[in-house]
Image (cartoon, rainbow, N blue to C red):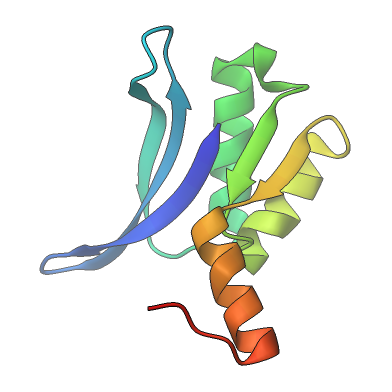
Length: 105
């Protein structure tokens, strides 16, 4: 399951939190979404607690994310060591590029 937040550009500055999985046909499937004020630990904890309640099978799954600090803290609070955590390849490339001063074009 991939989880991330994105900015909504409207009259109010809000954040859309998403949990996305892949169905049996290999298509993206939105499992949960919420609109919050910020990507804080409190917002992510609330989102993940509700996700865990709605999808109890989420224990033992793999979470792919961008390593947002609020999200990392919330994942640990809600799931502890019951999930495997992976980094999104796009964000991993950015971390590598900054660390080693290397840029793809």
